Image (cartoon, rainbow, N blue to C red; front, side, top):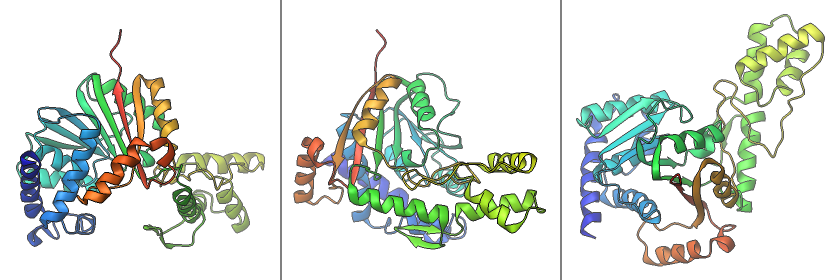
Length: 339
C-alpha cells in the first residue's frame, strides 16, 4: 500500500504541473478533455490503479525496466510508469498533435532521462532486437492497421521472457459492444456526420474518397464519382486513385464494397477506427509469433470500490464464461525463450 501511495503522489505531482491553466494554448486543447479531473488525487488514484492492476496481472514490477508504450497518445500511462520507477519509457504514436504535446510535456518537466516520445509506426519501430522488458498496447490495438506486423515487431523488440500487455474495450464476444461498434463503423463509412457512441464523424470515408476522385479526375460525371466512391471501400488514397485510373482505362468498376461486419479504413491514413476482437482467438493467434498468451475478462475496479474489485477477481477467474458480459479484456503474452 505504501508503494501504491508513493506512485500516486509522484503521478499527481506531475499532472498538477501538466494541467496548470498556464499551459492552455501551449498544449493541445484536447488534453483538457482527455485528462479531465487529473488535478484531483482520486482521479490519479484510479489511473495508477488501472496501470498497477495490469502489471499485477502479468506479475511484473516495472521498476528498472525498459518499456515501449505503443500508441502513447498524450503519455498518460507512460507518465505513470515513470512515476513507478521504470528506467526508461519510450512512447510512440502517429497522431502528431498528441505526440507533440507529450514531447513538450517531457521537456517542460525535464523528464528526458526517463521518457521519450517519438513519431514511429508500431509495426516498424527501428529499436534494436531484444531491447524491451515490456510492450504495452492500451486501448490502441483496435486502431492498428496491420495487427500481424505489430505482433512481429513486438516479438522482435522484446527480450526473451519479456511481456506484451494488451488492454482493450473492443470485446467482440460482448454482443452489446459488437452492435455499438458496428454502428460506429457504418457511420464513419457512410455518414451522416455527428456524434455516435463517443465518436465524432466530421466527414464520411465515402465522401472523402469521392473528394479524392473529384480532385484527380474532374471530368468524370457525378454519378461515376459516386459509384467509384461506393466501390472503393477499404482503400487508401493511392489505391483509390489507381482504381479510378483503371476504371477510366477499362470502364470496369472496382468491387471493394463496404461490408457491415468489417471495420472500415480511413482513406487518408489507412488507419481503422475500432476493430472488434474475440480475446481468446487473439490470445491463441499470438502463439504464432512466439508468445505464450492468455486472455482475461475485465469488469473494472480501478476506482478502488472493494465490491467491484472482488467482482472483477471472480470475472477474471471465470473468463471463459464471463467474457460475453465483460466491457473489456486484457491479454498477457510472454515471449517464449528459445530452446
